Image (cartoon, rainbow, N blue to C red):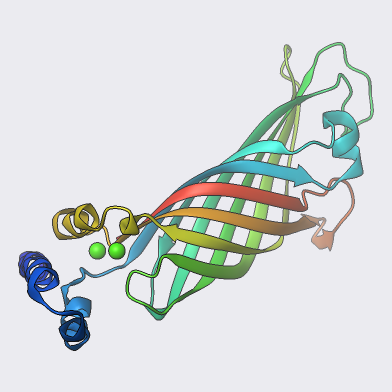
Length: 239
Ligand SMILES: [Ca+2]
Ligand SMILES: [Ca+2]
């Protein structure tokens, strides 16, 4: 099955290359159905992005300053549907770590040692993009989902630490800039050989409200909140 699909993709790509050489612009339209068939199946996405996250919480801002914190993020997605409307179900894992002043936000106590905050924002999102034209150069998208942030504050040195987690939601919007447009021949080759349909540079803004925690069997919003704005720039592959 795999081999058959692969062979079909190869033959399809060869036909497409031939067509684009010999066909007049009018004939290209007639071959549009062929073009769709020639693209390899698209099931998954992977994205690596970097950017900043601004934590809203006043206590965190006081100890760690209110500037944007560097954030790396890996996103893995499943593509249930991708014709005209592009859809994804995504799992995201972010990572932030930054040093603070010598005072614990958890207890308010002074410390001789410096403290460090580590955050692992996890997300489960549904993404919807508008991707109507074949090889559309800019794909606007947006979505929303569940957010779960694991956090740790630790003292450097003797290793005293506090950990916790907060649950919430986030909503996002962004643009995918199709790199295939820059090197169409190479992009077609990547699809035929590796099954990579599209490569994008993405720019994405996201608001997260993450402040609920389960305590004694009840949801509470006491203590720290990990809500805030994020801005990420990344590289994304659809395959
Ligand atoms: Ca593919
Ligand atoms: Ca493509």
